Every structure is written in structure tokens, then in C-alpha cells.
Length: 139
Image 1 (cartoon, one colour):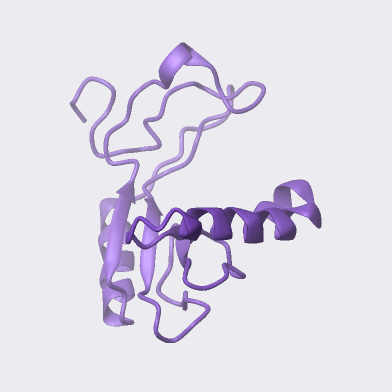
Image 2: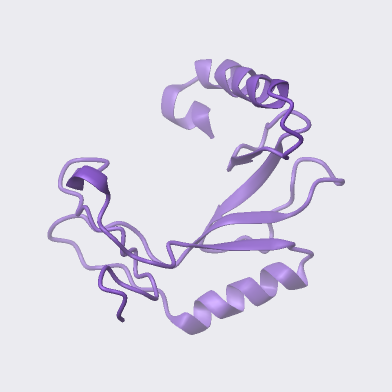
């Protein structure tokens, strides 16, 4: 959630962002990733390696997995993250078995981000994240 990054002001920001999004009246459902306190009608979703035990904050909302991580970013000098395909497939099966309705494989295609800048010091710019397809469309 936002409040993990910026503290208590994050709750007010989350509420403002939700009201702004809904106020656009697009007719499209809005979601907030890993935002357990997402106000109605915004849908809170799961991001992570495993989401079979995730439940939305309201029973009538769909159970969505917006980022099924195949790996993680790489710090320079650290081992490259690897997640076995069997683990990925099993976690999806468990999610669907537990009433999951949508899975987004994040990142399915690796690549290098625009501008070749990273999100922190000593983090590789590759978006491979152990994706099934690397920057070259291979793997």
C-alpha cells in the first residue's frame, strides 16, 4: 500500500486517488494493487509470488492477481532471481482453485526500461525478472 512508502499521508492520498478515478465516470472498474483499504468501488488486488490466500476487501469484488511475479529485480553482485515454471503453474492452479478470476503474468516479456534508469542504487535496468521471454524474445 501507499502508506508503506510515505506513511500516514498515504491513507488520505489513497482515498483521494480513488475518488478522483471514480469521479472520471469512465464506466471502467479501477483497481489498486496491494491496497487492502481501497475504498468502494475500487477493487483491491494481489501482487506477489503466491496469491491463493488473498481475499478482496469485500465479498462481492472479484479476486484479481494483477502481478504474478516470475522473478524479481537484480541488485548488482547478487544472484539472478529464478522461479521454477512448475512453481509458477502450481501457484496459478491454487489461485484459480480458490476462486481466483484473473491472473496477469508480470513480467512475461523481459526488456530494458525506457531511459535505462533503475528504481534504486545498484539495481540492473533489465525488466527480465526471470520472465519466460528475455530482452531478445528468447529464453
